[in-house]
Image (tube, rainbow, N blue to C red; front, side):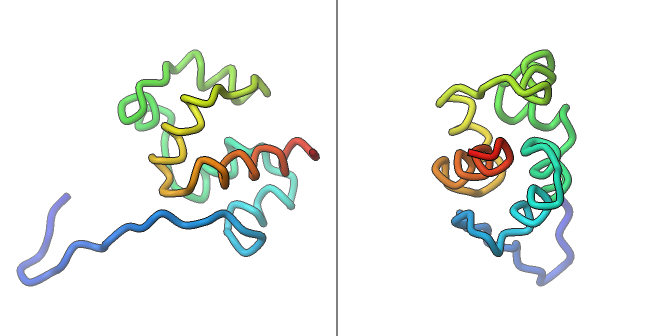
Length: 97
């Protein structure tokens, strides 16, 4: 990342998932949970693979409705600055449970 002189980095904080979260509205509009997170957080599949260690094949399985493991949920939650519980809630919301 390139910073301009005097520019301060934006501090990132873990955000709780709620009905006001942008991903929640994407899911409510019918998006798959993974597509909603990818779209709202602007995360290409290659970045997920590189930053989490989850293989491209496994990401494709998740995109085809495979159930994520607890380890995968923790890694993805850390990547998207959300709590693992929040990510699980969004997955359950997208699955209608």
